[in-house]
Amino acid sequence: MLEIIPKNTNIDFIGKRYIWMTISVICIVGSFVLMATKGLNYGIDFTGGAEVQLNFKKSIDIGQVRELMNKGGFKNLVIQQLGDVKENAFLTKFRGDEAELQKIASRVEEALVANQFSASEFEISRVDVVGPQAGSELRKSGFLSMFYALLCILIYVAIRFDFRYSPGAVLALVHDSVITMGIFVLTQKEFSLQIVAAILTIIGYSNNDTIIVYDRIREVMKLHPERSIEVNVNRSINETLSRTILTSLCTLLVVVALMLFGGSVIHDFAFTMCIGIVVGTYSSIFIASPVLIL
Image (cartoon, rainbow, N blue to C red; front, side, top):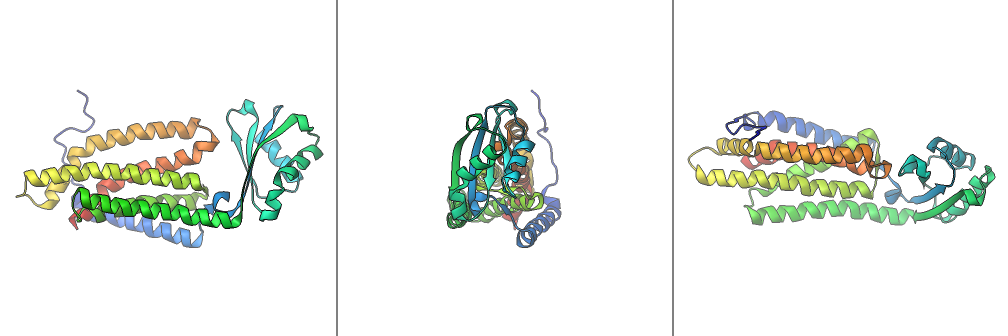
């Protein structure tokens, strides 16, 4: 039987725990500094705006659509291609005050007609408008959903294991969420409800990985109460290492495939999941377990 990690592996994860925890603290502090200074690039879900889906009957590329919108007087808009290039479908995102946004469909139509497109050559198939006030409420709800998820996991782990296990699990999840948001600030990718959904998925995935390690720690501590907690925790991490790496690699392959071939609509969700899987696997080994020892 093929073994990626031999059964007798004994890597000293716990012996180097302060190095890894210091690196994590630097990353978390850096993420908070970036969020405070540069800030997240909130999408229209959170700031207010409009999304208009355009379907063209003839071949057109994203550069031409952008040029048409610029000629129509629209600035600082985001355009995404939907589906295959041959489908000629685009999602355009606009910002502005609520009064302007309510007239966005007619303004887009006027801009296209003014630039030699007849009404039969394109179709506005969908218009979604989010007012600034609604966007602010969605932003608040999005962050509250992450807080409540972490609170529920804290309670679950305390009941499932012991209250001493809870801080490690929750700190690992806070670590994953904050670093993921820090990368979004660094790259200035749009932070939308889709990304909040991805972070909640990461929280669930990372917690599942941590629970596997914690289960093994509890078993090993019962089998070898004479050994120090450092030895038992290190042994447990090594024994679950093969499962951790295989699960993460298989999940990562699927998510990378989605990011590369899933199209622009799902790209940012898949990108967030890629970060989360890597950071979540790291935190299960280097954050959750060392905090349990502390």
